[in-house]
Every structure is written in C-alpha cells, then in structure tokens.
Length: 301
Image 1 (cartoon, rainbow, N blue to C red):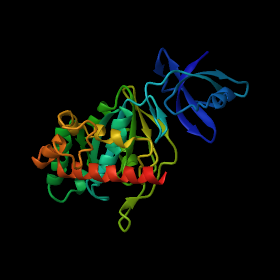
Image 2: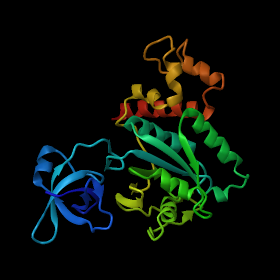
Image 3: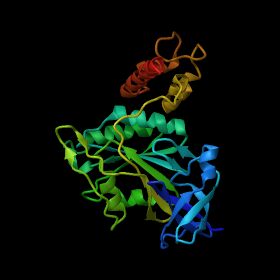
C-alpha cells in the first residue's frame, strides 16, 4: 500500500502527498483522503505532518489506513513530526513584543523542539538596527539561534530558506509580523494572502485559515499556521516553568532548597545571577509574570 505525508487537513479531509523512496513527491498532486473510523474509536486524530499508509478508492480519492509513530507532536498548532519551531517577531509594525516572544519560547521549550528566532521588518527600524542587535545578542547569549530579515529588501531570506531545508518547520509568532510575506519571498510564486497592519490596534489581520505544509525546496517544508493572539499555560505544570528558561538551568542546580521557585527563597542562585546581571531583566520579569499567571489559572480551573 502507498505511503505519504499529510500536507493539509481541512473540513474532514486529509490531503496526502505520496512518498517515493522515502522522499515526498513534490511534483505529484495530493490525494484527498478520509480517515478510517478506527482512529476515532482509538481516540486518535491524523495531523498535518503525519506519515501515513493510505489506500486509493474508486472515486479517485483515498483512505488514511494507518499512522506511523510520530517523532514530535504539537497541540497548538496541531502538527506532527516538526523538527524546528520558527518564531517570527517584527522590529516595528507591530513593535517588538518580548513578553509574547518569551511566552512562545516557554511553550516550545516544553515541547522539546529546536528553536529559531527570526526578527522581521528590519527595514522599518529607525535606529540603524541598534535595538534589534541588542535583542539578537541577548537571545544568542541564552543559546538561541537568531536571524534578522527584511522581506522588502530580501535581507536574510535566502539564508533562512537554506536553514529550513531537510525537515518540517512550524512558523508561529505575533500577528502581523509578516509570516506570509516572508514565505512569499522564500518561495517565489507561492502567492500567500498577506494582511495589512492596523496601526490603531497594533496587530495584523489573520490571513492564514488552516495548517498546511508548503514545499520550500531542498527537502524543507513549512507549516504556516493561524496567528495567535494569546497562549495559556494549562498544559504546563508550574513546577516546570523554570526549566523552560534555559539560562536558569546551571544556577538552579546550586539553589539551597529543592523545588526553589526562584522568587523569594534565601540561597537562590537564580536570583543572585539576575541581581548580578547574568540573567536579563526582561527574562526574569517575564518568568515572575508567567509564574503568577499560571498560579492564578490553576486556582480558577
């Protein structure tokens, strides 16, 4: 039976690209498939990115018969077998939102994916890129890979396309940061719909309606996903939060008390590192903010 990968899920249908000798047949049309009822009975649901066994039906469509084991699975957005999370945040229009960036990073750290931070719209910077460089260096010191791009000038687009080769990447981030514009720049002829920025609201109109894998060449696929207005922490335990801040790890091991929250305990080495300037103010402030937000949500649910 043929094998393939689900590249789109929409209105109860799964669109499967055939696999030929383990590689996606980019030049072949997707097969529109339904999922077998057995998945529902098992409490399973095929996801975009799933490698599947499927069969062809008489009407030219198909049936997803079997799911291969997943290497990874994201809940929001619902994508399987992602190897890299690409977080896009704009320099301007809308302004850089480090609070939201750190919230995304917490979720991605919890999922165990590699992360690439892409700072977009560098051409709109009004300070010769100084603020962008400060942000770039801060996150690189923590251990994140950071790239700076401009879809208008093309800066960084080719380097990004090469970086995304050979795996499935998920694009996420602030609304209005230029995800669709950047993808159009990476893949000429893609012609994704782009949205204007509302200067009054400071956010873009959502232009992406569903999760879909797009072939960007060199064996790379990007899951362009609906924009997010907020993320919650319901699937994350409050005791796990500090492990999602990479720069806390070495210091946390030296804390006096096991289970230290890094908020007020004596002998907390994370607090000492923050006071010494070894942990960025914004990162520690966001940790405290997220911690309190999580505690509040746990009480309400």
